Amino acid sequence: MTRFKSGGAADAALMTGMMQLWMEAGSVIAMRTTMSLLQTAPDGENLRMVTEKPAVFLRAQIAATSAAGASLMRHPFDPAAAMVAAGRAWTGTVSRKTSANRRRLNKHIAGA
Image (cartoon, rainbow, N blue to C red; front, side):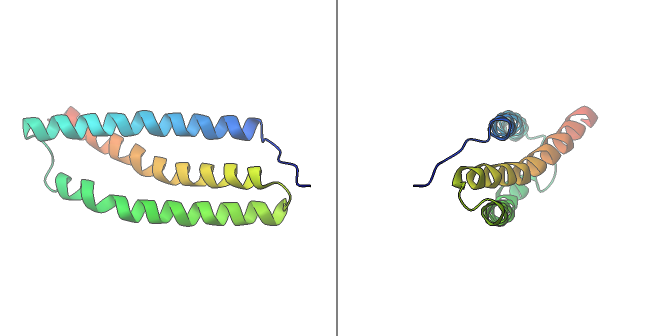
């Protein structure tokens, strides 16, 4: 019988990363919405909002799949660890893009 183990600290790190991503995504959405309503968005921002997502999600999915596979190779009887590794890889990949958008939009707002 397979025994599922929890990662403890790894689970907490995943949850922390997800919360950070959620907060940053919310701030980017708020900034973009406000700039669109006030018509102060940088040139090409509306196109960027739409076109960046598929590429980021594809990279995140590839990273998550690789992390899950590597985890299963190291610990074949711990699928929970593979799920946590995949979640952390996916969240980290998307979070890097979200953080970059937040920094870029903050500079635009500060300079406007």
